[in-house]
Every structure is written in C-alpha cells, then in structure tokens.
Image (tube, rainbow, N blue to C red; front, side, top):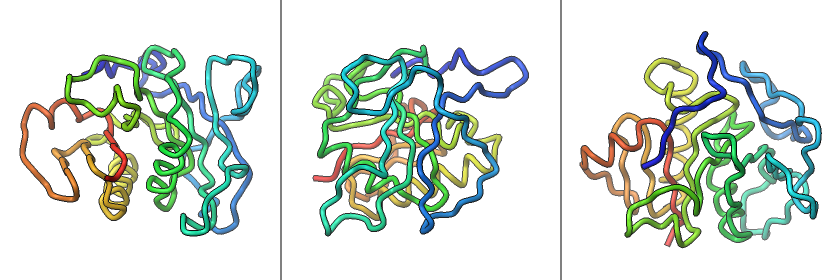
Amino acid sequence: MFDERDPREMSNGTVQSTGATVGQNPNLPQSSTVPVAPMPPGVRRTGSKQPVGTRIVDMTNQVFMPSRIQPKPDIALEYIDAKGKPAPRLKGDVEREFLDDVAAQGIKSIRIGYTTNGRHKLNSNHPRGLAADIDMINGKLVNTYHQDQEVKALVDSIINRFNARHDHEVYGPGKQLYRDRKPFNNPDLAKEHEGHIHWTRRR
C-alpha cells in the first residue's frame, strides 16, 4: 500500500546504504558479499533522548528472556521509510519478537520502512503496532527479488524463519502469502507485496 520507489536508488542500479555496523557475534557468519557502511555521522544508538534521522538498534545490548533465541541476534535494525523519513519504532516486546523471529543465518541488517506509519487497509495490523514491513536486507532492496539471487535467498530464508516461528501474517515477493503458516491465494495482496516483506507478530 506504500510507494516502494527508493530515492536513494541511483540511476546505475546501485543503492546508497544507510546501514550501520554492530559488534561481531562469533556464533554468526562473519562474511558477507554486501558490505555494511559505518554508522552515519550524528546517528546515535537507541536510548538517546536526542532525535535522529535514522534510528539504529544495537542488539548486542538488548536483553532476551532465557527462552528466546541464543545467542542474541547480531543485527543492525534501521527504521526509515522509502522517502528517507524516520519510521516509528516497534514497541519493546513486539520488537524483541520481531528480532527473535527474523534472525535467519546471514542476516546482518534490516530496514523497516513501515510500522504504524503509511497508508494501510482498515483491517491492517499496522495501526495497532503489531506489524512491520521490511524493504531492505543487508543493504539491498527487497524489490530486486526477481533480479538478484542473493536477495531472493535472503528473502526466502526470512519468510521460512517467520513461518517456522508461527508468526500470524507473512507476505512477500514471489506470491508468498501465509496466515498462521497456511498458504493462501490473493492476487491483489500478492502484487502489493512484491517489493517488501510484511510481518505480523504471532498470536
């Protein structure tokens, strides 16, 4: 339901990354074909009282309950929409569940463009703060799913992970539509999600 054109995608097809680096986790793969740029000047870690244009969560300092994923996900999480504006952050318990569930192998950074912001249908879980849209993974746009084999592999791994964690709604490129782990067919909904992954917390 949102405009997926990214103003940072240049004419030659490359993308200007606004990602960030976090501490290395020896239990996760350390190599990646997509380099993650250093944190932009002026950006502060979550918890700072000063507003910033790009919000980064350093998961190395997050507290997880013993029953949650171990080791802690080593993922740089960015909240910024396709127009370069800050997106509202997910609430604490929802964010922790999202990071627990998204932590598929090889995932280094995630950009969430839409939580409660943007235009969504009346029955959407977005206004309730229970849903997130991923439009960039490891510095690459999800809308290149059909052209970039690396993006396709990353997207598919995340969707498989979400389903394995019993998440409520998982929609993504390639007509991958699941609700409570059950696939369904909806051409209009599939078309709307060719450029991002939609996630709604488990129920």
